[in-house]
Length: 162
Image: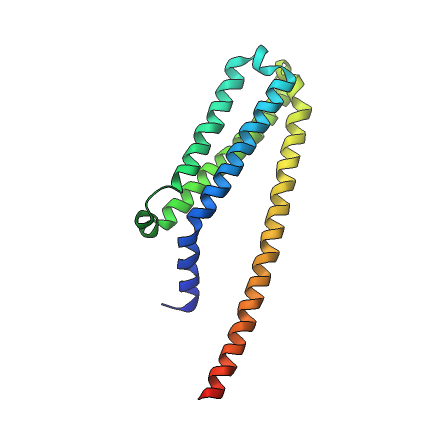
């Protein structure tokens, strides 16, 4: 097994912790934003089936995302790729669902009060994800640089001891 394979396997083993943290954060994010927008605009009173049905869908997909992190470590180690793909599917589903709600509110005259808050929320969520990715990538870049420098020093130290 090569060194990059070892890093890949280690990253897959550590990912359930990340799944739980991100799953809970984004589940709460979408459900709370939808609940706040719905109550602020009065949609939960005028269109309760629409409001609560979408809220339930956000919660159910969020629970599915979080539940992946609670599978046994043995199962996750054997099926890390499948678990990671399922997590991604649930994540994308929530994002697409939220965006489709924003688009639908633009075209349904009965949901006119949702247009500005939903479009603002979509913009805010996208901006936060971009910032998160940029921060994460810069941190990963620093870690990779550190690991390369550390490996370089280890190679020179082992060459001197030979």
